[in-house]
Image 1: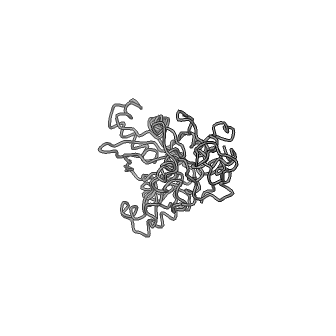
Image 2 (image 1 turned 45 degrees about the vertical axis):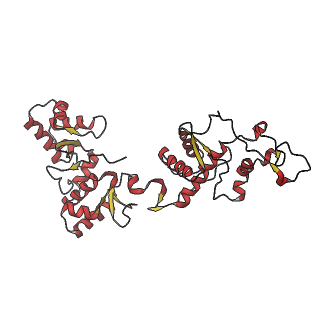
Image 3 (image 1 turned 90 degrees about the horizontal axis):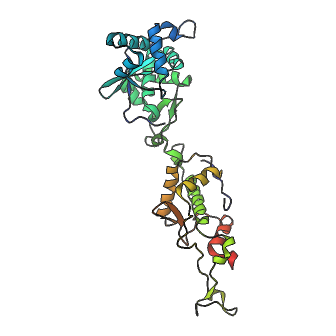
Length: 344
């Protein structure tokens, strides 16, 4: 479970249209005898020029249509252009992608191309489908269906690729029983991991409860005046006369009005301020996005602990709300403010 510290008082996604890798020519099944393949040296000068221009594209990893490549390299002859593309693909330096009905092309880093060149044909095929799955990963059963390889061959390829740290096995909160693989260099999407609310594919209720309590206390501390604002405290009054109580009246006969900011007060914390507090206070090492903070705030609103004001732009605690999981020691300071003990 991620660690959460109590604060002091007052304190890459898969594309919508996933390209499908479809190499025109499979990479070589083994590395060159030198062990270090200088792939560019095996290309003609025009093919090298095409590759370098594709690699220097902005943004990196741009996917080119045939028209864009024609403009990039200044070659209008389709046959000559396809010859240069094929030359790069034969060395594993360019891959062909299908986006809708269009065929597109993307340059591959030299180190990645050399890595693929060193694989067997089966390993390269398995790797290509894992690579195409992006940050979602791919189920081993899907790999078997797409490659049409025997299960034992798929398992052997996966074991080899994993031992070389090219791929990794990940757990999915949606499909906890499935064995899913993705490239070792990628981080799983939130759809796979469940985001910060899951630890080892299990909903981390203790972590969530701790954060809810901390966020609520912060909003509460920003929702009421502090001890420096004693002048705003209405004087205690008698239940019987509704006037200032006398020394002879019993404690249970005294009414203490709720201390609150004026109706036109506008400095309640916003979602951005609450997010900044959580991120900078050191209460957790987990990186939380503003959307994560919004989810916590929505739970607190549903629980009747806080409310939105200023057309949903800021938040304040609801009078009388408390943090359910507080110990007496942890809550003493906030309770003293909430019940106005210090101002009596």
